[in-house]
Length: 161
Image (cartoon, rainbow, N blue to C red):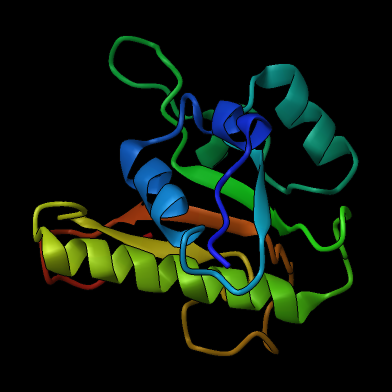
């Protein structure tokens, strides 16, 4: 069964960098686990609340969710997603989060292979593997449903952050 992002998820993608927006809309078509977009761009009040409730460690305006473009329009470099199973979010189902992250990484790679300029100069970082070493066991802050764009120094260069 092919899923599609609902209206609420699409609204959360408004103000998100186009690479992430396209990746999410592409990936939902191939995932075995339905998912929703919970956050894209966050304003100051929302980011402050996220820090206060320990859902984020990064204060306003330093989060990748708080990025604005040169014209001061929202241009979030991060999305938060969650599995949507039987009408609910199973917060403790880390496997479902990891499956979705894998589908989004694969979608990003497929879109980049189909059009090499699609994400030129960018890579993805997942909140389940911040240091990108392939292990979820050595993380100090697990954010299973977080995916962000990071800039590379130049196409093909190592990821810088």
